[in-house]
Image (cartoon, rainbow, N blue to C red; front, side, top):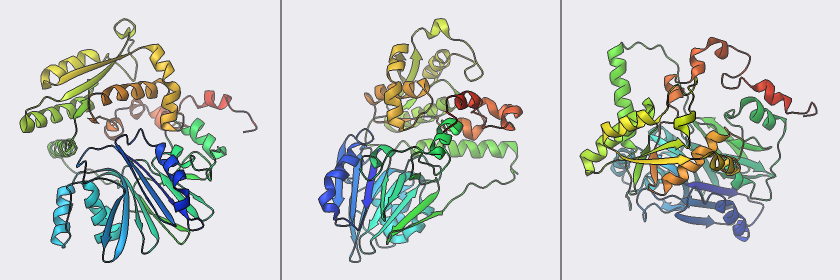
Length: 419
């Protein structure tokens, strides 16, 4: 992942405030440990922290492009899975490319199609493009909101960043929680209402939306929405379509100039992804896929079956490793490690989350990064394919709270009536 940040303000000469931009950008160093870059003029300051995955030299950011006498500046976090197809179309329209990075393709696509470029993208992204001639900022976020993007308006200025902590690194933005923010944390957490930034005045650009900022005015519009339609395919056609879509999604994410691996918990989602990736890497490059699995000290003695976790992971992981022939890496965590990581896990998220689940994921990913730069995972499979227990419990689905928030009365007891 990478980190993006920007500050558009025509009241100040932002060239004199570059240290503030650098301080904001530094908050995203963990997202982008490999490189940093800045572009600053009187009214616009753009920054970027980079995790290098594709084209180390050609993908440097912020990326600047001159076209028809105009200057465009891009800061981008994400990956386009159909880069080759878009580049081919743009070349037919007369554009030349100087790298093989998706960063350049995305910027040229915006230059060619403006906000309509979003209709061409198959990928995960959050990006900002500054049009120097029109003094206009364009922000956009991918359809499912995989990549984060927050913004805030302050006295005619607009600031944006990949994470909230980068915004509050600017003295203009105060980390204040209001009643709406408390409701998000205690009533909806660990989820969030699309668009909520928890802190007063901070908003999240919702998935499938774009934002334009020009002459001190903000315009936000939806460019994509999930549609519900009758399912008319028979069982066999459904199987074939789902199989094609899953394989295509996994294989498109294997484009990388750096080491790549996969999480493996032994469940259906991670096992399917690892199996597809392992086969592709072996067939194309003759290399084994590194897989990374988590276990806890004493789990063999103390594991107890539950609604969320009916079986221990390890036997299923070992079975999958044997079947797909992956290079297995085991990461074992202890209780003290998990407790000590609770605070850094919250700081990484900027807001409270899921307790030891977050701390274990934080520790796990730090260990994985020691071996590979990119790792595939099965996140969101339970949302798409109905894997959570509450999908099968009508009393939760039709209750007076969110299905995952059955303990809201306990949370409510922590708040003073004055709140």
